[in-house]
Image 1: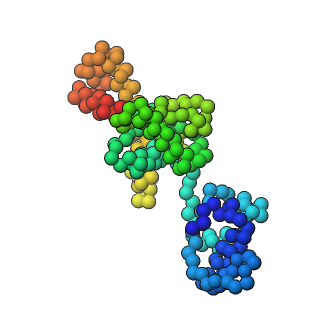
Image 2: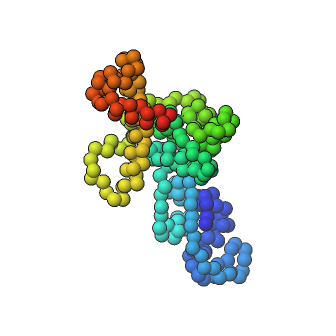
Image 3: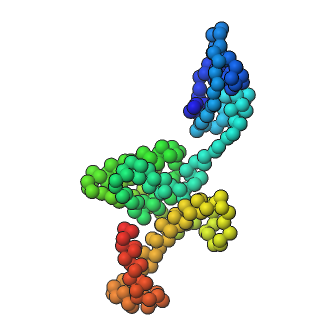
Length: 246
């Protein structure tokens, strides 16, 4: 496994090239007269721009085409913002398998913010969540919810935190809202993550509407329900569900 192959020393690049070129034949490094037989399977990874490196003469073009028999490209976090909250939750489950961590709605919206570029990708996200977790535990040893207040702007590479409103989060998506059921099987997982992101934003809108209806009717659930055009029991269950999500 070669990581960050764009920055490999020239001597190592030549050795890798010989191994790939001759496959199971003898390969010798620079300055060595005798070669040693090697049978290898090579996995190479980089965060760099290989096309630019080849154009600049920093990476051998012939080596690239021999290594690139099968290529996989993982999109940057900024290209799949809807996955960020789910990735943060997955990291928390791995880090604290015995503690049921949850992300507050403001933190979810912050992680989905179009203002964040995530130049450090997964490593940056993990560092942000790690530090947020540490701050939450410093406030309360039994903490189980991470909030936007636990995040330092410096960790995100911004001067100040601005939690976007739900409408901004929805409008910033590079894909339209899901309006039909014609979904390819290969897109099911991606569609589910998309739904998770939209549910988080819509939950905030629903909470605001309910709060406004209750305030307009002196907190009387039955009257607020009539104003919203839904049964009182439905409104009561929605209030309970939203309270549980705080």
